[in-house]
Image (tube, rainbow, N blue to C red):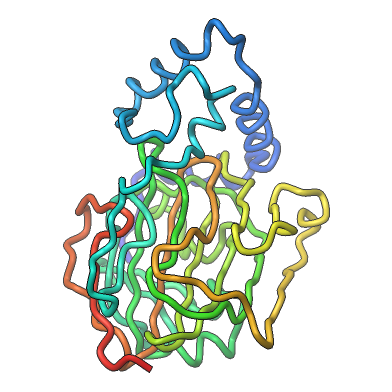
Length: 292
């Protein structure tokens, strides 16, 4: 294992003792402030320019967004993310940059640098991790410029969800390198699906400023709520869960973070996408091998 430079070791130590939850709440509070009507267009446009956001895709004119959070979590115009016509094509669950794709080996999600973390810990579900052993995964990082709604890469029924409390470390490249197993340490919201692509998991990983994730399939889940802040893992399993179409919205990040999708072995072949590749929700990332 390589030794981190002194500066990165200091940064790691500071983030480990920082009041992450309070900082995230402060960021969230600032973002949710309602802007004066006369200033909305200018403030939102300035924010969009700063991060290079394509405002032509936004569902509403800039002046109609009450504040930065509403704009940040914006819907897109109909047709902005068309899906491939072939239903056997697996699609990206989010806009962002590909961090890594690969195979689950010995219960570990391992990146190109050989750094791994436990799939069971990531999911908060040992049985689900066992079913996904030997399968494939893709990690996508969402920056502030990206569209922040997460969608299903495949069709199926919702089998279960898990909300796994955790840290709120940043999830940029430097943070991932300096904090071992970062994605399985930060707070997560996990959706488990069963359908033509077999068994699959879609994981939303929180970060600093993203202690607030919402699930589109269950309005009772809001991870910033006090009832979800006591460190207890919460789950719900469905005997006959909601039907999810490929491309359906699963959840919303309230600031940038990361998604991880994992597929059962023998059911999906992911494309070899180089790390750092920019990708958009709805873009094909693989194919169902044997529809169930």
